[in-house]
Length: 281
Image (cartoon, rainbow, N blue to C red; front, side, top):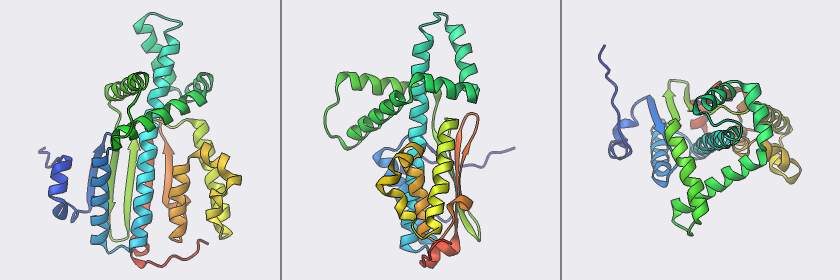
C-alpha cells in the first residue's frame, strides 16, 4: 500500500505555513526545544488559532499550556536519561560484564516498582540537581550567555550523547474537528509512580481551590513545597483551563505508560472562540 504521507523539516514548515495550517491533522517529531523550535511552534500555533477564530486570551492560555507540557516532556527525557546514566554507573560497581549489566538494566527499567525503588536509592535530589544543571546549561548555550566550565561541558555532552543513542524524542499530534482542538504529546520516558501520585494529589488540591474561586491561591507560598514536588508546569496548565472556565481534570490528562508519558489536552472550540471567561464551577 502506497504511503501518501509527506514529511517536512522546520524550514519547509515555515515556508509553507499558510498552506499547512489549513489542515485538521498535524504530526510533529520534536527532539529538543531550541530557540528555532520554540519560534516555529509559536508561529504555527498562533496562525492555526487565528484560522480557527480563537480569542487572543484563549490563544494565550492554550499556547502557554502547550509550552509547559513540552518543557515537562523535555525535562522527563532528561531526567530519565540522568537516572539511567547514574544507574549504569552504580551497576558498574558490581559487575564488569557488559552483557550482565544490560540484562540487569533492562529488568530494572521495565519494572515500574523496582525502577521507583532504585530511584529512591540513587537519591532523587542528585537526579533533580543534575536535571536543573543540564537545563541551565542548555539555556546558556541557547541564548549564548556565559561560558560553561569543562566539567559542565562533559556532563552536557554525556547526556546529549545518551539521549541521541536512546533516540529519545517528543511526539506531538494535533487534531481538529467541529467541536474541539485536541493535542497529544508523548515523550518516550515513563514518569515515576511516586511523581505521578504527587501530581494527582496536588491537582485535586488545585481543583478544590478552583471550586472556591481561589485557583490562583495554589501558587501562594503555603503551597510551594507541594507544587514544586508535583510539577509547576502541570499546575500552570491547569490554571490556564480554570481561567477559561474549564475543568482540566476532564480535559487535560497526564498518563503514565511502561515506556512513555502521554499528555492529552482538549480545548472546546466554542470556548476558544468565546473570549468569555466565567469562573470555574
